[in-house]
Image (cartoon, rainbow, N blue to C red; front, top):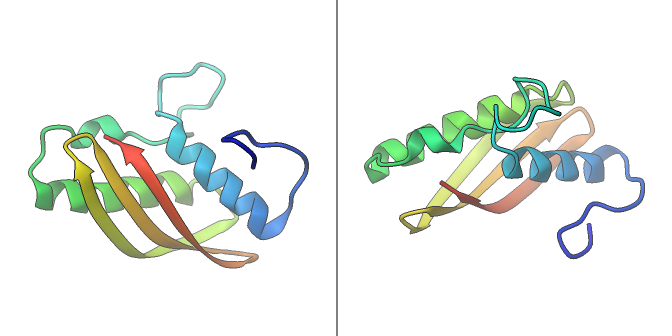
Length: 108
């Protein structure tokens, strides 16, 4: 990935990283090009208190990523609220190719 764009061909762990990045950047049900089960529903946590927001982010991220048949689990979450609309999310993706630690900011 260069300058926020996916380029070239990758496989295994690098492909998992790209897939996770893409899912976290794609709001579910917005783009007709994607199936209804692709993407993430971050809008459902808006207006929640901090404890609920952390719990819901964990659930939403896990559900969104487990749609990918290569991903078998999502563990070890750490969520920091950057501001009212942004969260820094860290977690481990367990896949058929191995584990990878992901660190992303998501807009809520």
